[in-house]
Every structure is written in C-alpha cells, then in structure tokens.
Image (cartoon, rainbow, N blue to C red):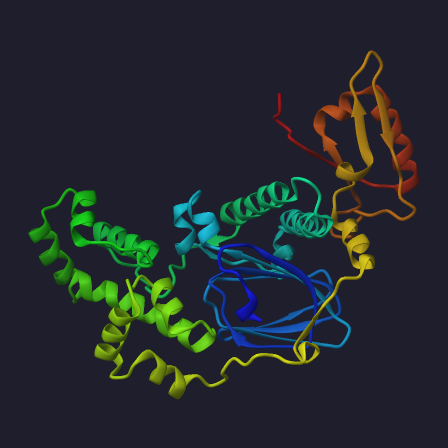
Length: 372
C-alpha cells in the first residue's frame, strides 16, 4: 500500500481491508469505519474499531490493520510536508485521537471530524471545478481541529520533554522539527544569541555528544525506521532524512551500524514489502455510489437542508428527512441547527415548534454563538 502513496499530496479512499501488513507513513493517517470491524495494532497498542469508530495514526507509528470480509473503511493520509509551510510545528505534534474518548464529552468534536472526512471524500469523487481548493480547505480545517483539541506533549523519538534546561530543550525541539533539512550550529547560535564556540561547548556538556553527532543520530534513527517499514529506495530514505546524497548517508550509516543501509535492511526487515499482484488479498477499493450516499448522513443537517434568503420577507425552507439523521442517545436528542441568528427569526421559531413535536428533541445546537 505505501508504495503507491505520494508523499506530497493527501490520499483518501474507501477500502475493504482484509490485511495491511506492518508499515508506516510519513504523515498522519485517519481510519473511519463506515461498516464492519477492523483490528489495528499501533506500535504496542491494539485497537478494535467497529462501525462509526475513528482512529488517528501518527507519522512513523508502525501499524498493522486486519479486517473482516464486509468492512468498509475510509482512510485519509495527510503528509506533514503539506502542512509545514503553514504550521511549522507539525513535525513535533503527536495526536491522541480515537473515538473511545467520546465518553469524555468529546462527541461533538468527533462528529465534526466525521463530517469533514465525509465532505472530503465526496468532494474527491465529485471532481467538480474547484474541488482541490475545497478539499485542501477542509483538510486545513481538520488539521486545525486536531491541533487545538487532540495534540499531546509527546515529541517523537527524542523524549526530552522533562529536560529542565529550557534553552537546550528549545534547541532539541528545533532539531526535531528541522533535521530533514540542512542546518548548522552557527544558525542555532544566532537564534539563541550565543557565540558559536560557547554553544558548541554548552551543547556537548548538556547533551553528552556534539551538535553534529546528535543531528546525525536523529537522522539515522528516523532513517532506520523508514528502511524497516517502507519500500522506499535508499536515495529516497537519505533525502527524506536530511542527508545531502546517498554517499553521505551510506558513510554515516556504516559508521554507526557497521553495515550499509541496504545490508541492514536485508538483515533486519522482518516482513519485507512486496508488490501485491492480487490486490483483493490485501484490500479492495470501494467505488460504489451507495457508500457516498451513506456518507452524506454524517454531514450536518444545517449544511444540507437549511437555506435562508434575505429579502423583504425572509423565506426559510426546512426539509425533514424520513428518518432523523442527527439524533443521538448520547446527545439527549440534540437537533443541530445553523447559526444562532436563524433562531431569532419568528418563522424559524414557528418551524422549530413543529419539528419539536415531530422529533421530540430536547436541545438545539447552534454555531457561531458570538458572530456579528
């Protein structure tokens, strides 16, 4: 599967997953179960996902997915590089996002994620004029929601969050964010307003190795992960992890591991990637329009059925579906409306009374409470 993924663009699809062998992605991946069940192993944690469940897998987390015959799973992969230009800290973000946390009162946030995923997939398959603009705006909205509500303090391979020296912690955070690029101690010295000589001694005393050695170790740890769990060629691995060329990568790798990257991969890769000739043995893409229609149930009723025309007399159209769409036991029969200002309209209030008699909802949910 990973061999077909472009690292500079989002990937979204509906899949019937039988087995995705152990692999990683260089971006975040979100699984949303539309039908059936899947078992997901992420590093050392195991997750059982049933219909309506969500799970976010962080960049470079090793994971395996196994499912039953009838499952349908929406998968969205978002490369970090596509977010980096707008949010530089994305490479050190770690997200704790799985729908079992709905029990903590986060169900409205998870409903927003489900809706965004449904909108992205529908826009992807409709391929209308401007669809890419629409999809990217939805992805940015999704990532913003994740950053503001699900980001944790985990900082990747280098767990230096408890380090008491704030300056060193800032430097190590900078390295963690930028080791894929070219960087120098001189650049960091200028950022910290320190002399190059002082910072060199200061860094080695605090961390235990020189700056260049630490950067090299960080790059090699990341490269080893990529060697073991992707099918990327050696040149791609070297460039993905901050090495200027394959020669420099081979030299640094052999100094640390006494083997070339190719030799290391050959000896240590437990489950090598293979070209899948019979795709149905691993997963099958689901292209049925039926599931696009089914996904529309996750899109808020206000976005599909409520239109307001501003004129001398306001006309409000509210179309009731045959079956209530957004009535949830957990939400105590919650009716999701549009903006709060709609409720100030007398005609809307009259319609709400009629709807309340039909649906027996107890609460109404409005957006943009403090809008102009």
